Image (tube, rainbow over all chains, first blue to last red; front, side, top):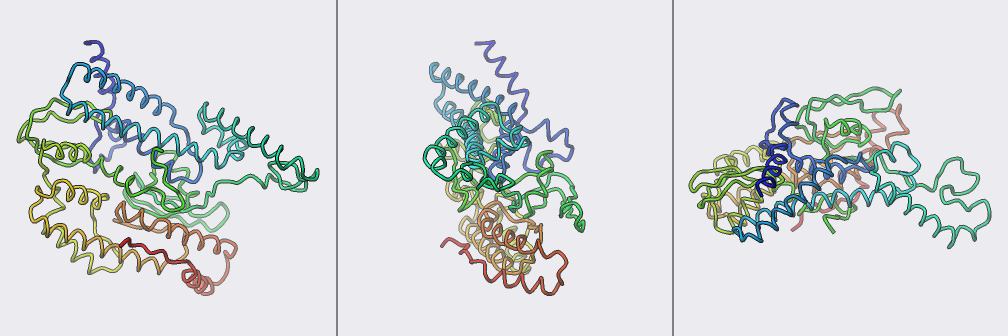
Length: 235
Length: 210
């Protein structure tokens, strides 16, 4: 029991409790005082709001799973030892909240994978963002879908139109593959002062400057890089 | 399913917005003894009678419902402060007053579960509702005057308000952007008159649930 408690302490010491609403200005401090739940919440929010799939937070998910298992064991322990039921129910609530975040995060990603299945497998950049299991799922899903289409419809069409990816042999690109809309507008908040180029390369360079804490409706493409580096959060 | 909102209606359901707000720290005064809580989301406690402590909103509500604590309403929820904010909101047509990002959710949860801990609760509640109304109305009227841009700054808009207007504003801005793109060097004038026509064509979604 003693060793168990000690390991618990270690893990909980590794992640200090969330800092208050204002947050500190030094990045190092913010990083040290952001709990895993905060990080998971941020990942979940970003994933939900972004039109394309984002980088899989493998380490975070693993840590979260570990902590969840730990707390599940603790709760079982408490129940067996007849600990104060109030305490148990509070721990259970915290556990439920964390589990919800984790599950919803994974589910949102699955929805996006299914939606842009062929695109994710084609584009190297997108494929890198999937976890191992997601890649396996996506490949299997795509294979099944292709097989289904071929058997039901495609093989019965004239020769030039039998591809799942192209409308016909004449098409130069894979125009049957739906792509995520990177020009969607999203709401974002900046964590630091950030200056972004509003337009594509070559066009008139207008920039938008965001102070820390400003809210903006903005095109996803513009903030994509900043989200990946953690400077901007989607709301 | 864990939180699968239909993205065509709204990105986050109101429950999910509330879920996010529930992590905000609030101050409570426990009336019992309890050891420190080592949650996944952080360490809270110890709980000693009459000693105020900060906990996340969800935990505070849970304790309150079991009669284990009372709330200390946040500073911004005083009658004086709210009256001031309401005045300022009414005065300015285009700017929003600074309120906590989750003020709607926090106020709602406090009214539902801890109304006896709020001094002048009826006054406070009616003030908060008035502030909400004024702000929502301001949002609606401001939406009609968009210019087609790639970035729109919305300062001091709260989480719930963002969530309500998000679907409409997204479609409107996307339409602007789509129609703007091929005409990079057309006259300023023709462009703005075209934008005004776009604004009228966009179906106006009712923003307020009555």
